[in-house]
Amino acid sequence: MVNFQNSGFSEDQTNYLSGFISGVLQSRQMPFLGQDNERRFTHDPAVAVEESVFGTPIDDLCKEEIIKYEKNGLDCYDAILENSAHNLFPEAGDVFRYKYHGLFFVSPAQESIMLRCRIAGGSLTTSQFRGIGEIAADWGNACIDLTTRANIQVRELMPKNCPDVLMKLTDLGLTSQGSGADNIRNITASPTSGFDPDELIDVMPYARAMHHYILKNRDLYGLPRKFNISYDSGGAVSACTDTNDIGFQAVRLAESIDGLEKGVYFRMQLCGITGHKQFATDSGILLKPEETLPVAAALIRVFIENGDRTNRKKARLKYLVDAWGIEKTLSETEKKLTFKLRRYPLDGCEPSRPKSKHGHLGVHPQSDGKNYIGILTPVGRMSCDQIEQICSIADRYGRGEIRLTVWQNLIIPGVPDEQIEAAAAAVIASGLDYRAAAVTGGIIACTGSRGCKYAAADTKGSAIQLGDHLSSKLELDTPINIHLTGCPNSCAQHYIGDIGMMGVRVKTESGESVDGYHIVLGGGVDDTQAIAREIWKGIAFTDVPPLIEKLLRAYQLKRKPSETFSQFTNRHEEDELRALTD
Image (cartoon, rainbow, N blue to C red; front, top):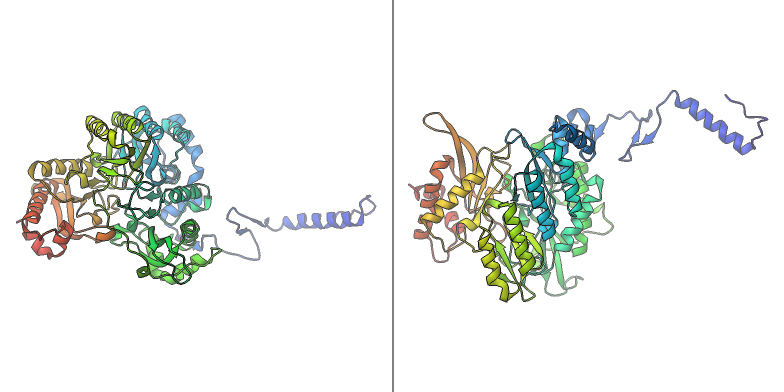
């Protein structure tokens, strides 16, 4: 022991130094006791606790959780730079971590990288849209894909260009952070919010606030699985809010009741996951608009701490709520809030108005006296030249803004009455269309096997062929949605389509493996909410167009007055529906 007597130090200094040195000597026999970046104490010899991730032992974690445990995906930018210098694709765990930056190595479908952006509420300026087009032209395949989360993807990027792509995206005021892997995906919102004559509230500010809150809180990355959030303004155009993990649905209280002032509130819906045949259901909670963000953040943190990290098939929010029940889930959420959750019955709120099924297409009046034009983009794909033309139309005739929808199309808002004809003609001249064609206007397709390793069929190619066939064979007087998805992940949400198709491989009589589909009928969302029923299994695509044609002809011939296709199919038994096409 060091002796500090007669050293010139005061008694207090001597006592402090003696204690300090004693602690140093003790630390040679025991590890340093500190806290890690999650504020957990480390190397405490008095508490021999097995290392874990939110209570799950390391040995029990699934492969993706091990990858995240070894290195946070947000911390792989050095790997992106290193791979860029040598034009190398990511390997091993970095393939997963790249997705934290919105970069997807899509081998073996393509030996290239896909960029998925992150666009709050699907709203962007024409300069931003042009900039994404420039990314596609300079480094990608000279086209973009609009997605079913009101987002944009750029394909066929090479590793050497990834840093430039990410930097340009930032320069545009956009980002791709957290757009893939086990993170909160693009926040969606009613695409006509802010100018819809029928809406209850403009939800775009709340979608943007949620978007930026996620970006600025590192702990909201690395969830047990992906997570979706959506805002519905109560207007005419759907955002498919009831297919999200959290859906905020605007409602109105017509009069003051039980201490609540009349006005606009949000119902919180939970656990939409239509790939697992489940819509979000009302939680019994009524929120003021400003309460939606803290409640979502609290619930997400409950999910982070308690979601399953051992089984990817059981790792979505639905399965935690199934295990706990809604009341425990809400109780645990409430513990993270500074206010009490407000329980209020759904039937005490005015019901939302019905949605306009194809209100995202065509010319429609706005609340400010101007108009928006909904533009049909076949299966969501646009060339860079079309991007430039659409931006020029929005600048010249609109207000320099583009709204993306979950229906793989876009909207130009702010067109005066006297400019509608010129703007519409310019849309047609671009090679796109604004007219709500009953067949092609409702066809949606995921990326498919040309660009996704999970897909069993070329969904976009199939969708275009199907649309061409049906358009040449018949005319419909009512809108019908046809959703083609390549695999059970159901990115195109085939279970909510009037007609849904999921890609599978089908063996022909000669033994050849070809694109085929399982076909489901009778789905819908919002006020027509229904999970479609599987009617046909393993139909080779060559047989699909004539089969769907026969089905639609039977609907036209045998329907009741004003009966929708979904109503028609849902009043028939499965054998009866199959018999309609025999």
